[in-house]
Amino acid sequence: MANIAVLTSGGDSPGMNAAVLSVARNAAYYGMSLIGIKHGYNGLLGYSDNPEDSYTKLNLDTLLDIADLPGTYLRTARCREFLDPAVREKAARTLKQLDVKGLVVIGGDGSFQGAMRLCELGIPCIGIPGTIDNDLSYTEATLGYDTAVNVCVDAVRAIRATSRSHDRPHVVEVMGRNCGDIALTTAVSTGAEIVVVPEMKWSVDEVANRLNKLISIGNTRATIVVAEGCWASMKPFDVYKYLLPYGKQVWENEPMTSNRFASVLKRKCGMVEVRDTVVGYVQRGATPTARDSAFAFEAGAMAVQLLKDGIGNQVIGVKNARTFHMPIEKALQANRPFNKKLYKLVNSL
Ligand code: ADP
Ligand code: F6P
Image 1 (cartoon, rainbow, N blue to C red):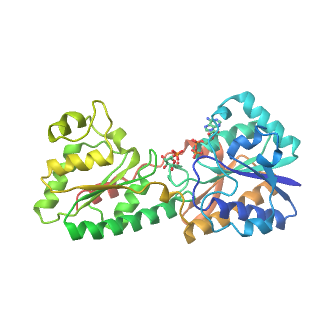
Image 2: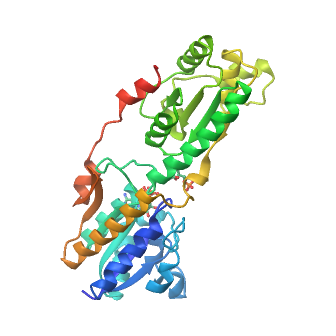
């Protein structure tokens, strides 16, 4: 096998560059050359007249300089057109024209769907789970998740310090799309008193009651960690009707947000202030932790080894602290239940 290629797709995640470097080092070790596809699957679609905008030979020397950097050197993107079979055929043709014998796709479940389709078109693909969300059930951890959690833990610790000083409860919103893992692990790691996630149905009154209880036993500075997707599992609450009499700027049919939730809790719990912070993109753009960098190293090595052995259609994951691989299709069907026991423990102590 002469050529392999690598791309990053979907939201960027800390450790993507380290994984690309690992792929490059392992490819070099086996005497393969490596092509970096830019902007996710877009780089396979010939959008630019200048091929350098779409793909490039990866130079180990350049990559050595970016391994520890957050973000992704190859750029990433979402590519809606890739849902179209004709577009995917074009992508497969590009890879064949480049004499690419295998492709490493670093991304989340959407990117893996794309990789599975490319396998069907004769391109052996290996997926490395690059997403902060930890929403891939087949693996205990995705690349970037540990970093994102550590960013959130630092944020919550800092917020708890000021909350303590002012006796103010605080709503902290973290990322994770439809997955509550970042929120739950952050809550557990910081001693946050309340956590709200998309996997569990919940109501505003439940949280207000819990906060009132905490206040009644002297905890006037609780932290409420909310996953960004939690509003979807909230029992209906008319935030407009509730906040309007208090003179809050709010419009009919506006959705609940962390800011509005904090305002509602302030009123329902009779606090002078309940503040809110959205941790946001610092979770995605952070420098990878040792755990994520180490996983990137192992995953890159395993991906190249598999392609060298002529094996495709696999994704790489972690189980019991060991890196493993399994078929993409089976991985996408996996269903790891949310840790309800831990969730209940956080919300009851
Ligand atoms: P992630 O990979 O982080 O889950 P997305 O869900 O946005 O991010 O998916 C990234 C890209 O993967 C999409 O923009 C698209 O190019 C490709 N993709 C997603 N779903 C499919 C699908 N069902 N078939 C083919 N390609 C897909
Ligand atoms: O999938 C990673 C992620 O950061 C999610 O946590 C978040 O919902 C989403 O990407 C945001 O994506 P974008 O930056 O494209 O809006």
